[in-house]
Length: 247
Image (cartoon, rainbow, N blue to C red; front, side, top):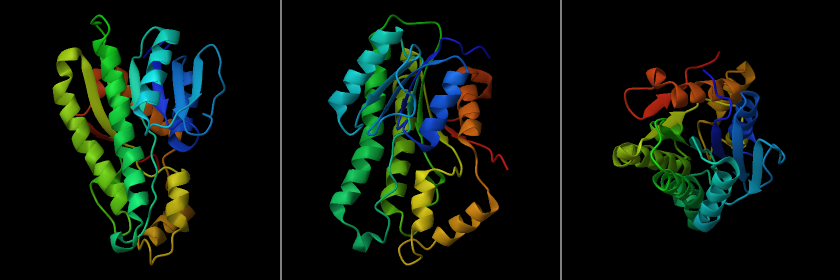
């Protein structure tokens, strides 16, 4: 699969999965537009556009998309990866402003990125190659756990949102998928493992998994993502793709 010259956008590219995707994509010869609230993992270069962007700010996301398209000529793949896991705790105890902020980043950030990408694709002459939108989900979207109401509900909403977009935009040549990466040793996992069982009962199982090293690497996730993005034969029957365990 020749990926040289393909253009991808990755949000939340400062650490964890997003940083791993950025490195892997560039290693494959791709050109990337990276954004995150903190500085993205890769510095500006001939094949890298790197910007600090809050995905909760729709206008900032649109400006970023326009800049990527102007620099590289097009966007082939848009990956909505930016997200936060907190607040963690029982719904009865949560700060609702923190709950709303979680959804503003996790869900509305995906909405903003998706709309920016759709606007870019629909504003260009129709190309033979498909344009691909991949939104990052989680097992928590399908199996909620006590203490994870904010995160789980935002990820479940992303799944349904992606299903709708897949139907709405197929006439524009846009393939929309949601990818569940499995357990990756990211900042999200570190936060979960740090939680006392009173706030999140499942945190102990995450600590046991960490002790056994049962993680998918970001490079493993990136390889599967690129396969379903650019090899139609590898795609799932529906919008959801669950990355198989590496271990």
